[in-house]
Amino acid sequence: MTSPRTFFETQLQEAREAEAKAQRQFNSLAIGRLTAFVVGVASAWAWNRSGDSIWGGVTLIALVIFLVLMRRQQAARIQRDFQRNLQRINEDELDRLSFKFKREDTGEQYQERDHPYATDLDIFGKHSLYRLLNRTRTAEGSRRLAQWLTQHAPLEEVTSRQVAAAEFRKEAEWRQQWEATALLHEHAAQHVGELRTWVNEPLAAPLQQSLRWRWWPAVTLTLGVLALTGVLPGWPFWPSLIAHGFILKRFNDQLQSLTNRTTSLGHTLLAYADLLHLAETAPYQSPWWAERQSAIKEASTSLRSLGGWFARLDYRHHPFFVLLVGLPFLWDLHCLAAIERWKQQYGTQLHAWLEALADAEALNSLAGFAFANPDYTEPHLLAETTVHIEADTMGHPLIPADKRVSNDFSLKGTGQTMLITGSNMSGKSTFLRTVGLNLVLAQLGAVVSAQRFVCTPVQVFSSMRTQDSLEESTSSFYAELKRLRQLLVLAEDAQVPVLYLLDEILKGTNSADRHRGAEALIRQLHPKQSAGLVSTHDLELGQWGATQTYVHNFHFRSDVQDGQLTFDYKLHGGICQSFNASELMRMMGIRVDL
Image (tube, rainbow, N blue to C red; front, side):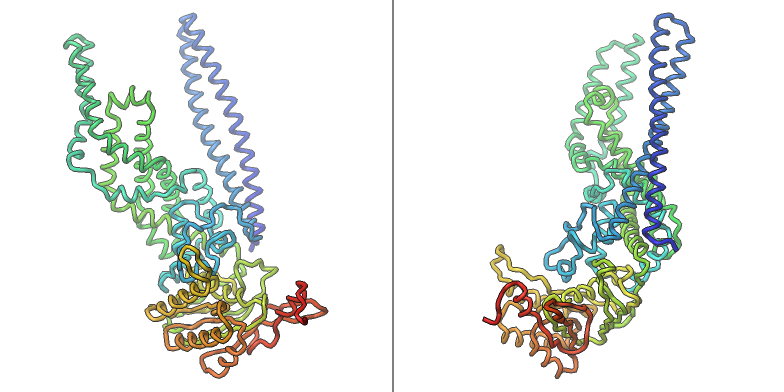
């Protein structure tokens, strides 16, 4: 197989060549348009001076050629921009292989306060799992990906996503075509929450009935024709035309409200229509995708129609259009009537269309992540009600492969606690995040950083970065206590077992209270629907754990060689026997022997 890097580099080079070709075509067509324009102006001048009809024919031919070239130039511009987008996508993929995230979207807008694990595990942020995965280009898609990252899906949904992602993974060029198409539309990232709200709001009955007045311009036009032909005097025409203003005034508030809430929405809908057209013709057969594909029949043509009407409604912001077309023909009412007809015909289907689009974008992200990491494995999820996690050569997915140290890991049985001791900087916190992130990926439907990974559905919960809050007048210790209470409540009511990750437990108090509190917490969690990992510097807690059948001691070690600290970042059995705080202080110039 071609390596991901080679594929991205090849696609990048081909896109550069295609862009250069499209640019040359664009330039040639621009010269042709200019030539046709000059010829048209010159022939029109000659026709005016001489009155010879042949110059009129030349003028007409030049105009037709000008319009044809303009259309072709627009197509060349779209092709050029499409190839530029492909370059942007492949440059982004190459940067991502080196864990350089250039896209501005960090996902922090989706961060939830008191979420069970999102803050501790770097789900969102500048260097986060969201940025590593995210290949969405619409607001609906990015929100769906964030939802998948923060809400564990049922086992059946996860396994169906895995099958679909494996199929999507094989179509790398199609997935890039999707992204490049979305990037052609600057409005594709716009949120459509207002549209969802509008679809469920019926037009008031009096206004609905009054829409039939949109045909009054036919009366005005008839009066105007009769006045011009001398059949009727001219004065009836003017009151009829003035009546247009009163009719529009009745709908002004409704129209203003609609256009204020849907600024540029017409362009957004056209972007979504293009994407849904791709989705309708996607070459996928998995049951997960077939279910969504069946829900989007007619979606692209219907959204394109609605987007067109919203775009036409925006013409009301142009004064000349209002005077020449809007007022004489009651343009706004015709747009509003068409939009209301669309709402009645397709409004109930809109939600399903947007959901399918969001799902497709999120799954593109999972497939792109799998394609870029061919050495990762698809996890095997077991339909069991207890905690069962096994991993071979499991690494942290946010650490580059050349720096990543992988470990084997196993935790079986509800009520079990893995107690991890170790010196500073030896890898305890990183290991807890490694376990948590791979469990999040597994229950997302994504591949994981391991050679083999087996797990049962669990609710991940972490307490690793508790901080004080001036706003709430709470200390970091009290914040940690609140976090631990949240864990106890969750473990009591959870529908699936809770897998907890507790780092440096109760670090904000004295050693005696820390030991008693940690021991009491582990005892209290033992009979609940939970299991997990607890890191600590407390050797006495490890010694106590050695006497309990449900506590298992492991450690990370450090060594001092030639006055330098070394770490292997490997998980070892038993209680840690080497600590480095004194050595670290000595290296920083603090004389601990005084």
